[in-house]
Image (tube, rainbow, N blue to C red; front, side):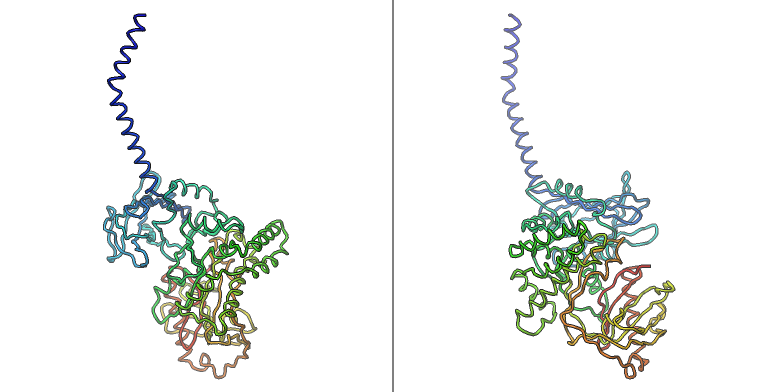
Length: 547
């Protein structure tokens, strides 16, 4: 009894003397913890990007910071890397393409030509790492390329700089780090970004097969902040992830090439517009029908491919889409066809749907990345060509890298690729003697294809192909011209390309010079298509040459 009387007294005495302090500490720590958690939850965000590079190297980019982008931290890690690399980088402000140097730069960084920085990767355990802290509020993104300091080679993405948007995948109300992590965990090995290409955000991870719910579009748009709510945009407005290889190539080259090399005026319908339009209430029944037909095709009934294309042609366009497409075409100086406005839009809309529908032609369906491939559309001014050409910066037969091989025909590119029997005019130009082309074959094609109008519109499929299937993808989706081409019997007796040796040498050397400039920019052999009109060289598209 004595012990039972004494012990409670001591306990009561001690608790009473400490209870105020304990309560204060408990409240203070709770407030601190809640403030810290609230701050982290409301302001911090994280995005993670993976790029699979050459020789099994992996580049991981982690961006953490605040919603506004202030004091963002970027960590770049090269994994499976055997030697040091250099990060050649710069900052981008919103609406500006030019690089600039931030106010705070990492240690060991050198300034290059007043607008770029070169920071060496430092070995940390099993990886090479660069840590960047960005303190300028005007920084919207960083761009960079990688330099292999050991072999003096550069690594780009699809011929352009890697682009990391500091505002991408920011979700203030949710844990941004967790969201990004889950997103990456959901992706299969094949869906993680490949070398020299941007991740296609319009694949099955983000767009389950032709979902009929309009919430699919809204959820993806808000979650990834990649797809804008625009139906059409100029190439300057689109970021790399929004558009395909053709658009990225034209945008890149048009800013780098000399003024005498021309490019057709262009507008792009970015990735996700097809899915967005299909998810509209006005197309709800069609979306359900297409989804059912796709299931039949997946079960082996390829006869339903034609029905899918026919159903796509029945889609209706939101009214805002027609207004936006016309506005962007006008601001980009693409001629709007003459005629009643409603009839003209109907022609344009049918052409757009035919390009989208070509994803379900038999050749395209056999493509190994059919389910995950998303098609944008490049709307271009179609130039009525005097001549069309294709040129290879490595000779395609001899594989001689010192020679540029060119083929030219009268008329459009379709004349060149086999619309009629006969040979094209061909030439070989040494890269060391660009002004001295050597004609190796004179033309013998009897029929040329010409558009009726000097200026028209063409709709080209724009997509990102897998590296392993890069060349198989080209040519299997349909390009649609607003007007039919006319067959013309070719006469060479008065053709300046044949009878005027000065004009002949001038055009062949111009094409070879343009090809050499493009090869130098991409730092790899190129396959280039283009046309000549009134002596002006227009580059239509180019891609890395399959050797």
